[in-house]
Length: 338
Image (cartoon, rainbow, N blue to C red; front, side):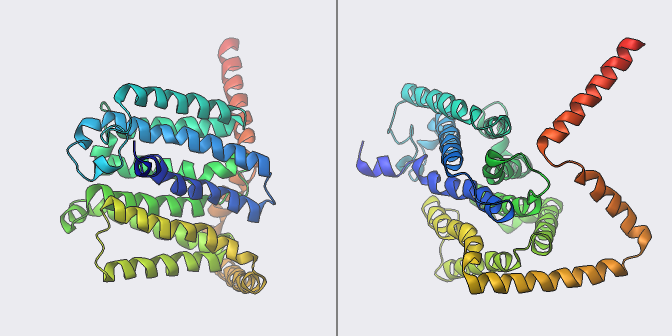
C-alpha cells in the first residue's frame, strides 16, 4: 500500500469533517455553559472518531463491487481500491465498533446511546436490505437525523443539560449539511428539484426558520452573519472558476475550506472588539424582540407561553427519563390494581 493511500482513503478524508462537527457542540457548550473538561473532551472525541470510522468501512464493504467500476472511487475506497481485502475490512469494522462503543460507554449513557443511534441510522443508510441512500426522500430525513446527532454529540458528551441546548443552531447546520450531501450524492439537476418541489420547499422553510430563530435567540448574531457571508463568498468563487461540486476531490476541497468557518465564526467572538460588536447587535435584537412581543395579542401569546413553560420544566435528559419512568410505573400500578 502506498503512502498516498494511507493518507487518502475513506476514513482519513472524513476525519477533519467529523472532528469539526463534533467540536461545534464543544464550542457551543463553552460559550453557553462554561469551559469544558479537556480530558473528557479528548476522550469523547476519540470515542466518536473511532466509532464513526466504522461507518465508512461498512459502506466500503457493502459497495465494494459497485465501487470497483468507478475509477474515481477506486482511488480512495478501502476495499475497491485494494487497500485491504474484504476479510480484513470486516475485522477492522469489528475493531472500530467494539473499541469506539466501549470507550463511549465510559463517557456517559447518553453519549453511548447517541453513538449507537448514529451507527444504526448509518446502517439503514448503507445496508443492502434497507438501502435508504438510494431514495432521495429517505436520505433527506435519515441524513438530517444523523447530522443532528453528530453536531450535538459533543454537547451531550459533556452534559445532559437540555435547558440551554442550542437546538435550532444544530438543526440549521444539519439541514445545510444534508442539502450539500444530496447535491453530491444525486448530482442535482433542475428536473430532480422540480420533481420534489414540496420536499425541497419544506427543507428550505425549515432551514430558513432554524437560521432566523438561531440568529434571534442564542446571542451569536455576528457569528450567524459570518456563517452566511463567508461560505457564500467561497462558493461563488468556486462557481466562478467552474468547479464541479459533485466530484469527490472538489467536495473534499470545499469541505476543508468551509468546515473551519463553523468553528472560527464562534471563536472569533473571543476577540475583544468582535465580542463587543456581537454583544451590541444581540442587545439591539433583544430590545426589538421585547417591543414585538409586547405588541402581540395575549390570546396568541398564551399558547406559546404555555408551551415554553411546559418544556422549561425539563432541565436535563434525566428529568425526561425520570418522568417517563414515573408514568410507566403509574400505568403499571393502575393495571395491577384493576
